[in-house]
Amino acid sequence: MSSTRGQTLWLTLLVGCAPLVSWADEPPKRISVVEAWAHMARRETEMPVSIQGQVTFCDSRLGLAYLQDESGGIGFDPRSEAAMPLVPGDMVQVEGFLTRREGLAMILRHRVDLGAPKVTVLPPTASRVQAIRFDLNDAAQMRID
Image (cartoon, rainbow, N blue to C red; front, side, top):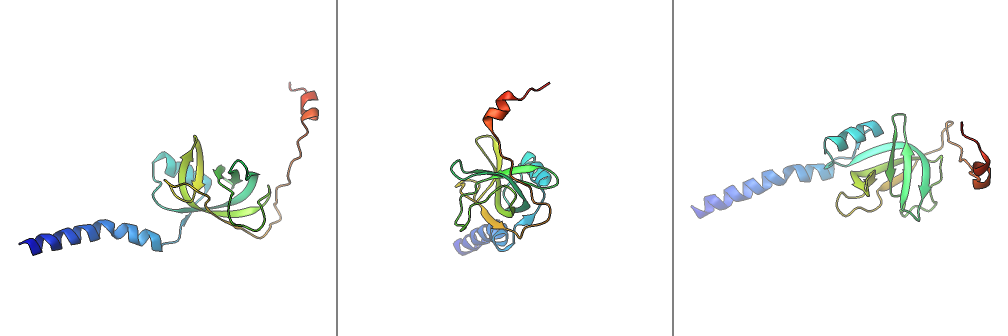
């Protein structure tokens, strides 16, 4: 009788863990930023995702960067082992888990342990965003109507 219980327990554990094993083998699902927001609203954050877009802001000291695609923008941690730091205009593919950090929707390495996601810099395209130089003195003299 105990042998049957042991087999039943083993089978229950095996079946219960089967989805976790198969997720690790699957590549992250490629989605758009608006789909990422929808997944977060439905609290569907257990699967890794991949989002491709253009870097619009990057500050490694803050551990914050934003990428934008045709549908919107989302944050990620740019601190990685990459040889060159990211700059606005770089096309990147970011792979990780959707989460919130200090109220910001972000892609990070892990939902609980956080950390920088996998960031791959893609070849440049013709629609590269030009970095905007901001002069505080000029901005202070601007008049907004």
